[in-house]
Length: 462
Image (tube, rainbow, N blue to C red; front, side):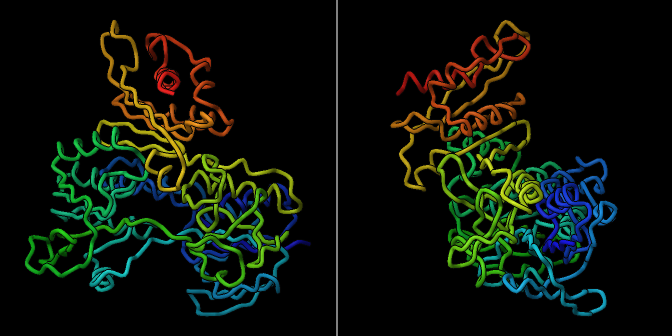
C-alpha cells in the first residue's frame, strides 16, 4: 500500500489529492491543512466586498468532506512542523488539541501555497495586530474585510496589481473614499503597458479614487480621531506624502510558503521549489526526487514566453500542476506544457485581458522586444452600437515570435487573450497570427478581427 502525504490544500493540493485518488483509489492519501477550509477562491474577495457574490459559500469549489468522500484522510487544522524529505517522515501538530504526531510516507506532495508579502515597514506589525491594516489572501481575511467594509468611510489600498486594483474599484463603488498606493509608476504595471494602464488610471480618477503612484510606503502611524466608527484609523506614510483612512489593505504580492523545505529542496531566489516537466522536485544538489512533487504557488512554472523557470502564482497554474501530480506520481507520464500566465480583470466598465510578456516585462528580463498597438471598433460601424478595442502585441523583432498580448475594451474581449496564449504556446510568429483563420460576423467582429488586425500591423511594422 502506497502512502502519500500532501502538505497544504488550496488549489494545487485539492486537485493533486483528487487526481491521485482517481488514478489510485486504493492508496492512503493524508492531507494536512492548517486552516479549517480549503479551495477558497480568493479572487472573489473584492467582488464580495462590492456585493457581487450570490453566496460566499460558493467561493469554495471543494471541501474537506468532499475529499474525504473521495478517499483522502483529512487532517484539517493541522500545522506541519517539520518534514524530512529523504527520511520520508513529517511531524504535524493538531491546532485544536495541541497534540503532535509523527507520520511516515512513501510519496510527498508539497502544495503549501503562498503567503502575503509583509515588507519590513515601520509600524506595520502593530497596525496588523490592531486591525487598522488588513491582509487579503484567505477566507479569514475575506470575512474581516467584508465586515470592515460595512462601516469604513475611507480606505487606503496598498498595491496596484490585480488584487489592489479590484479592491480599490469595489470600495469606490460602495461609497468608500479610496486611495490606491503603489511604488511603481503605473496601475497594473506588471500586467499591462501604458496604452492600457493609462485608460485604467483615467477610470479610477473618474470614480474618485486618489492615485498615489510611484510612492513607496515607508511607515504606518495610528490616526486616532478619524471619523471611523471606533474613532481610530491609520496613516500610510510614503516617500512623498501621507494618506489617512479608517483602514488600509495591504496587497503587496505573494511569496512561496516553503520555509519547511528551504535547506532540502532546490529553489529559485524567492524560495519557490524548482520542478521539472513532471512536477518532480530536486534536492539542493540537483538530484531529481522521483517521490517528491511540488505544485501551485509553492513551485516554479515553466514560462513559455521566456523558456525559463519563473514564479507566477495563479490559480490556473496551480490547478494544472496539481492535476499533473496524479498523472506522474508513479512514473513520468504526462509533461507539463508550461504557462503564458494568461489573466483577465474587469474594472468599472473596462474589460481587460493579457497573456505572456508586456514590453516592460520583456525589457526587465533583458529580452529584445517590440510592441504594436492598434485601436479599432470590435465590430462594423454599420451596427447600431460598437465600441473600441485597444490591442497590444509584444513580439521578438529577430525571431518574429509572439511574446505577449494585451486587450482592453468596454466589450468583453477576455477570450482574445486565450487565443494569443495558444498561439504563444504553439510558437506562433506575428506572420502566423496575421494569417490565422478568425471568423467574421457583424454581430461579433470586423471583417478582420482585432486579434488578426494587430498582428497584421505588427508585420507591417517589422
